[in-house]
Length: 168
Image (cartoon, rainbow, N blue to C red; front, top):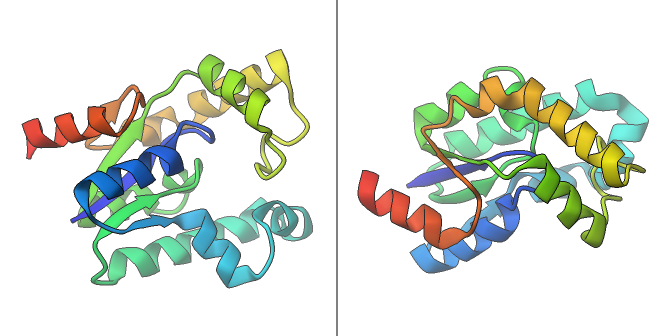
Protein backbone atom coordinates (compact mmCIF):
# COMPACT_ATOMS: atom_id res chain seq x y z
CA UNK A 1 0.00 0.00 0.00
CA UNK A 2 1.19 3.49 -0.90
CA UNK A 3 -0.49 6.36 0.93
CA UNK A 4 0.13 9.98 -0.03
CA UNK A 5 -0.65 12.82 2.36
CA UNK A 6 -1.22 16.16 0.67
CA UNK A 7 -2.20 19.60 1.93
CA UNK A 8 -0.96 23.06 2.75
CA UNK A 9 2.40 23.58 4.44
CA UNK A 10 1.85 23.04 8.16
CA UNK A 11 -1.31 20.97 7.74
CA UNK A 12 0.24 18.06 9.62
CA UNK A 13 1.38 15.79 6.79
CA UNK A 14 4.64 14.76 8.48
CA UNK A 15 3.34 14.64 12.06
CA UNK A 16 0.17 12.72 11.21
CA UNK A 17 2.03 10.60 8.66
CA UNK A 18 4.55 9.37 11.23
CA UNK A 19 1.80 8.49 13.70
CA UNK A 20 -0.28 6.78 11.02
CA UNK A 21 2.73 4.78 9.80
CA UNK A 22 3.42 3.62 13.34
CA UNK A 23 -0.22 2.57 13.82
CA UNK A 24 -0.32 0.74 10.47
CA UNK A 25 3.18 -0.70 10.99
CA UNK A 26 4.41 0.55 7.61
CA UNK A 27 7.33 2.85 6.74
CA UNK A 28 7.01 6.63 6.69
CA UNK A 29 8.78 8.80 4.12
CA UNK A 30 8.96 12.56 3.79
CA UNK A 31 9.42 13.82 0.23
CA UNK A 32 11.11 17.03 1.37
CA UNK A 33 13.61 15.02 3.46
CA UNK A 34 14.39 12.83 0.44
CA UNK A 35 15.00 15.94 -1.66
CA UNK A 36 17.25 17.54 0.99
CA UNK A 37 19.29 14.33 1.08
CA UNK A 38 19.58 14.40 -2.71
CA UNK A 39 20.50 18.08 -3.15
CA UNK A 40 22.70 18.33 -0.06
CA UNK A 41 21.19 21.57 1.26
CA UNK A 42 17.96 22.87 2.74
CA UNK A 43 15.00 23.42 0.45
CA UNK A 44 14.94 27.08 1.48
CA UNK A 45 18.57 27.52 0.42
CA UNK A 46 17.99 25.65 -2.83
CA UNK A 47 14.87 27.72 -3.52
CA UNK A 48 16.80 30.94 -2.93
CA UNK A 49 19.71 29.98 -5.19
CA UNK A 50 17.86 28.21 -8.00
CA UNK A 51 14.23 29.33 -7.87
CA UNK A 52 10.94 27.51 -7.57
CA UNK A 53 10.94 26.08 -11.11
CA UNK A 54 14.23 24.22 -10.55
CA UNK A 55 12.97 22.92 -7.23
CA UNK A 56 9.67 21.70 -8.71
CA UNK A 57 11.57 19.67 -11.34
CA UNK A 58 13.65 17.94 -8.66
CA UNK A 59 10.52 17.41 -6.58
CA UNK A 60 8.65 15.84 -9.52
CA UNK A 61 11.56 13.47 -10.20
CA UNK A 62 11.81 12.45 -6.53
CA UNK A 63 8.06 11.75 -6.50
CA UNK A 64 8.24 9.78 -9.75
CA UNK A 65 11.10 7.70 -8.32
CA UNK A 66 9.06 6.88 -5.19
CA UNK A 67 5.92 6.14 -7.22
CA UNK A 68 7.91 3.84 -9.50
CA UNK A 69 9.60 1.76 -6.83
CA UNK A 70 8.11 -1.23 -5.07
CA UNK A 71 8.37 0.44 -1.67
CA UNK A 72 5.20 0.49 0.38
CA UNK A 73 4.45 3.12 3.01
CA UNK A 74 3.22 6.62 3.67
CA UNK A 75 4.69 9.60 1.83
CA UNK A 76 4.20 13.12 3.16
CA UNK A 77 4.48 15.39 0.13
CA UNK A 78 5.43 19.03 0.01
CA UNK A 79 2.46 21.40 0.02
CA UNK A 80 2.89 22.24 -3.66
CA UNK A 81 3.78 18.77 -4.90
CA UNK A 82 0.30 17.90 -6.25
CA UNK A 83 0.09 21.16 -8.21
CA UNK A 84 2.91 20.71 -10.71
CA UNK A 85 3.47 18.53 -13.76
CA UNK A 86 1.24 15.46 -13.51
CA UNK A 87 2.13 14.71 -9.89
CA UNK A 88 -1.44 14.33 -8.65
CA UNK A 89 -2.24 11.83 -11.40
CA UNK A 90 0.92 9.85 -10.61
CA UNK A 91 -0.04 9.61 -6.95
CA UNK A 92 -3.65 8.63 -7.69
CA UNK A 93 -2.48 6.00 -10.19
CA UNK A 94 -0.25 4.13 -7.74
CA UNK A 95 -1.78 4.70 -4.33
CA UNK A 96 -4.29 6.35 -2.05
CA UNK A 97 -4.23 10.14 -1.78
CA UNK A 98 -5.51 11.89 1.33
CA UNK A 99 -5.98 15.65 1.52
CA UNK A 100 -5.37 17.00 5.02
CA UNK A 101 -7.78 19.92 4.96
CA UNK A 102 -6.75 22.08 7.90
CA UNK A 103 -7.87 25.71 7.83
CA UNK A 104 -5.34 28.43 7.02
CA UNK A 105 -6.25 30.12 10.29
CA UNK A 106 -5.33 27.03 12.34
CA UNK A 107 -2.15 26.48 10.33
CA UNK A 108 -1.08 30.13 10.78
CA UNK A 109 -1.60 29.85 14.52
CA UNK A 110 0.40 26.62 14.69
CA UNK A 111 3.22 27.87 12.45
CA UNK A 112 3.49 31.12 14.41
CA UNK A 113 4.35 29.00 17.46
CA UNK A 114 6.65 26.52 15.68
CA UNK A 115 8.36 28.85 13.25
CA UNK A 116 8.41 28.93 9.47
CA UNK A 117 12.06 29.46 8.59
CA UNK A 118 12.31 26.25 6.57
CA UNK A 119 9.20 26.96 4.48
CA UNK A 120 10.33 29.06 1.49
CA UNK A 121 6.91 30.31 0.39
CA UNK A 122 5.99 31.43 3.92
CA UNK A 123 9.32 32.78 5.11
CA UNK A 124 9.22 36.07 7.04
CA UNK A 125 5.42 36.12 7.34
CA UNK A 126 3.58 36.39 10.66
CA UNK A 127 0.04 36.75 11.96
CA UNK A 128 -2.53 38.02 9.53
CA UNK A 129 -0.02 38.17 6.65
CA UNK A 130 0.76 34.49 7.15
CA UNK A 131 -2.91 33.55 7.29
CA UNK A 132 -3.64 35.55 4.12
CA UNK A 133 -0.73 33.89 2.28
CA UNK A 134 -1.99 30.45 3.34
CA UNK A 135 -5.50 31.37 2.21
CA UNK A 136 -4.10 32.42 -1.17
CA UNK A 137 -2.14 29.17 -1.49
CA UNK A 138 -5.28 27.20 -0.64
CA UNK A 139 -7.28 28.99 -3.33
CA UNK A 140 -4.57 28.24 -5.91
CA UNK A 141 -4.04 24.64 -4.86
CA UNK A 142 -7.55 23.52 -3.96
CA UNK A 143 -8.39 22.27 -7.49
CA UNK A 144 -5.43 19.89 -7.18
CA UNK A 145 -6.05 18.93 -3.55
CA UNK A 146 -9.69 18.13 -4.43
CA UNK A 147 -8.45 15.42 -6.81
CA UNK A 148 -7.41 13.38 -3.76
CA UNK A 149 -9.38 10.23 -3.19
CA UNK A 150 -10.14 11.25 0.40
CA UNK A 151 -10.23 14.46 2.42
CA UNK A 152 -10.06 14.75 6.21
CA UNK A 153 -9.99 17.68 8.63
CA UNK A 154 -6.43 16.75 9.73
CA UNK A 155 -7.27 16.09 13.36
CA UNK A 156 -4.96 13.10 13.58
CA UNK A 157 -4.03 9.60 12.48
CA UNK A 158 -7.08 8.01 14.08
CA UNK A 159 -9.37 9.99 11.77
CA UNK A 160 -7.53 8.57 8.76
CA UNK A 161 -7.49 5.03 10.17
CA UNK A 162 -11.24 5.19 10.66
CA UNK A 163 -11.71 6.47 7.10
CA UNK A 164 -9.47 3.76 5.62
CA UNK A 165 -11.27 1.03 7.60
CA UNK A 166 -14.64 2.21 6.28
CA UNK A 167 -13.60 2.74 2.66
CA UNK A 168 -11.16 -0.08 1.97
